[in-house]
Amino acid sequence: MKLEQLGYNSRVEDLVIENNLRDFEIGRVISEHKERYIVKTERGEFEAEITGNLRFTAESRLDFPAVGDWVALTVYGSDLAIIHKIIPRFSAISRQAVGQFGDVQIIAANIDYALLVQACDRDFNINRLERYLTICHSSKVLPIIVLTKTDLLQEDSVEEIVKQINSRIKNVPVYAISNESRSGYDNLKKIFEIGKSFCLLGSSGVGKSTLLNNISGREVMKTGSISESTSKGRHVTSHRELIVLENGGILIDNPGMREVGIVDSGRGLEATFDFIGELSNKCRFKDCTHTTEKGCAVTEAVENGDVDRASYENYLKMQRERDFFETSESEKRRKEKIFGKILKDYKDKDIKGRG
Image: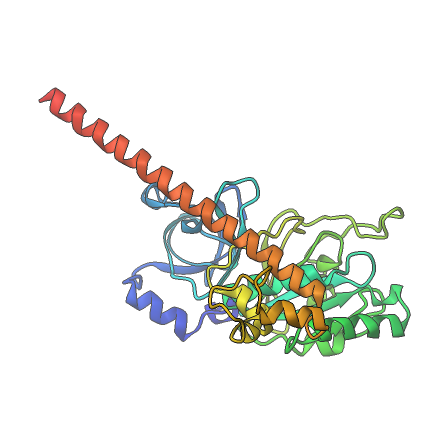
């Protein structure tokens, strides 16, 4: 397989040259299993691990390889490789790491488009869609909304859902499909371009793996049966994996995410709720929080019905979440700095004592 089929292009090539990595073999991480990685190169797939130096100098989880990363490696024998460096990412979909104070987890790297998958039945939630949109905008990834399980609803009900989305989310394409009848698939398949990387984002049981199997034309992911009590597919995908489709597109499947914490280092919140940014220019105070201030153009628009109240409240919720994360991250860095100074002072005293 040529690297171009994995998404290699002039942008990646320039980064390889800039970082003096032409003497290494170049590959792309297609799956991760507890800090052991499967990397695909022109010579095949290799199980790889990172160098001790890369592990030692890593300051956070962001400094470890993620699915979708381009890496410089050395191959030993027929199936073992060592990763020396991660080629700088041009995009990375991230969220707050579950259970990790002030830490970030990369969901997928070097992605062009994210498919935001929701089922039309019980899973449908516009607030969650706005959350995924914020992650995409922050990550420099173009979002595409995909509604599954349309066969469970009447056609007019599906149309109403699409209408609800379009009323709150502007300029984002929406595709409604059925994994059972394959309705809507002809249009959906047209979005996949040769060499472009796509990522599936969505909760468990919305049909992501079935969607991947149907698009690829073969069973590349196991799928679960439908639960009679919840009408949802049982979650099967347990790890992230990059798949090259027959039509040349590249798709990364992800386990369903119960928690999608906002990191938003790239002002994704402002991009998702751009109407609030526009209205804030008319607020009486420049530092308006759009909550209780007099002369707030945002709250006035909400009260007048010009701004959807649910969308406004979702914005405030994610803003509080982002602020809390930034505070947590700052506190974590402060504690690490103090600990580093204590360790340095201890080593200096130890060296002087020996002298």
